Amino acid sequence: EIANDIANTEKLDLLMGGGRKYFIDRDDGKNLIDTMISKGWTYYDTISDIDINKDKILVLADEKDLEAYPQRGNFLPDAASLALEALNKNNDNGFFLMIEGSQIDFAGHDNDSSYLINEMTDFNNTINVVLDFAEKNQNTIVIVTADHETGGLTIIDPDQRYTNTYFHFSTGSHSPLLVPIFAFGPGSEKFSGIMDNTDIIKKILECT
Image 1: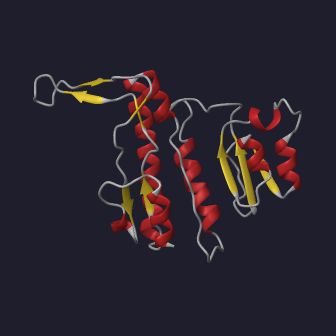
Image 2: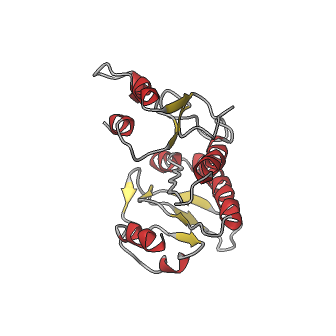
């Protein structure tokens, strides 16, 4: 249903990720990639050799989920860099870009600390790309947060010396723990303290 909505919206200019099967291997028999091409999208199955001057860019780089990091390489930071360059060109009205490190959630569900550290490393590399862009384009606000916590993670330090820590997960599901929110750029002072997650969009709109 989400793929169908994406194929038929006029409000998107760029999409990069996995999930190709949801566009072409469908119960309704539709080929949504063809639908999008007919509406002016340029389709790629890799982020290599993308023409960022195209008006609408669709990248579906895997049938379902991309591989875990580092097996997938620098897909996320590279895609972020390309997306920022493409959306920023000749765009006097600005743009909104959402970037998700979705497999951080997968690792939390799996209670897999190595998987989690790898995904957080990749996401951190991606944030650095975005912050570099924001420093050069100082009318940009960057917001980093999560929709929920997964795994009930705590970092245990039995010796109280911070030399022998280990991860402890209390659940394989989502938890009610508060999640942090970080902001950088004009209007970032609005994102402080404890807030309802539905207030975030209101604060974003105040910054535009």
